[in-house]
Structure formats: C-alpha cells, structure tokens
Image (cartoon, rainbow, N blue to C red; front, side, top):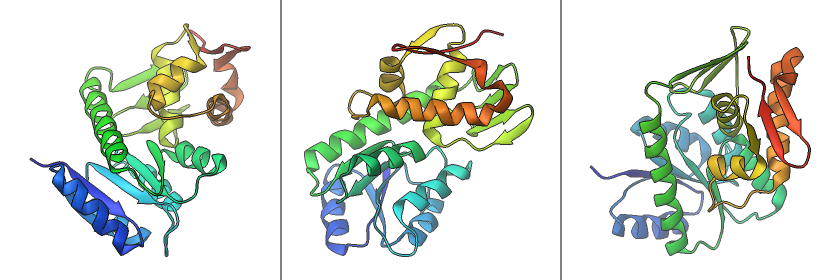
Length: 229
C-alpha cells in the first residue's frame, strides 16, 4: 500500500510541483490550500504532512497545535515547508511538535530524503510501543500510544517534543542524559537544533510538574537526570 503524503500550501504551483515529484517516488498525495482544509484532510489518515507556515484561515503553527491536541492526529509526522528561515520560527515550529523544517525553494532530493527518514523514525517508534506503552514514575503517568501525560492523575497537555523528552527521561530515570543524546534521540542527526531548544523544553516540562519540578536535576554544562523514585 502506498504511503500517503498531505501537502498543505496556498500556492497551487508549489502543490503541483511537489505532487508530481512525490508521485514519481511512489507516494499517494493529498492536498489542501489552507489550514482548515489541511485539518479536514487528516480524516484520510495521511502518513506525513508537508505544511506551509504562512497560509490563510489557519496558519501552519495553529494547524500543528490542533493536531497535537487530538490523540487521533497527534502522531502524524509534520515537516514544515516555508519561505521563513529565522531561528525563532524554526524553534517555535519544532517546539510545537514538527518533526523537521525545510525552507523554500525546496531541493527535491533533500525533501525526499527527509520524508523517508521521518517515516522510518515513525515506523521504528510504532514498533517500540507495545510493552512499554504505559510509563509510570512517581506522580507521572505517560500513555505513549495516545500521547497523554497525567501529573498527579490530572491530564496535562504536552506538545510532541516535550512529550518525547519527558518520556525519554522517565525511561532513563537515574541516568545522566546529555543534551547531545536528547538532540540525537528526539530530533535526529539530520535536523539542526541548538542546545537552547533543549533547555526551553526542560523549563516548560518543569513548569507542568509544578511543585515536583525537582524531579529533573540539571547537571551543569552536561545535561539532565530524572530522579529515581
């Protein structure tokens, strides 16, 4: 069965160009010209979304926020395609849960490679879920298959990357996890992310842990450690 790619972009020429090249690679292609249409098209279960940031009705950032709040769509990988290339835009997109970020004009060989890498990572994670579907650590309970986190039995929303960082720390409780390890395990070696991005994610996770923020120790200049219970 062909893997299905959803392209969401308000420029018809870009959709047609990408559609032609993706179909040559054997993908089935869906399309949407704005954020509202993109969300509607997720009902057709795309395997991955190529998402422009600057779109009418709902921009790409708002689309990702909506996707990640819904357990039915939270695990769909997203690659941003955008003409914007500032570091701030990249960090915001990745923090919201995008898997990758590619600026226009798009190199088709590079795009195809990134799509295939992201789909392989998705497949590997799905194989990983079974017995370790539920992670428990003190007041934290993580349901990995539904992308849900409970703190003191209360469900708290975690964007995708925060969710994955927390899950990785819980799975490795008691061990020192370096920033480099988090970058390679959560974002992968093909995506450039600065160390500050990790620190921002840890700060936001601690805020959600509230009075139990000290569950996560900082090892200055090296990384982080989830306390053993």
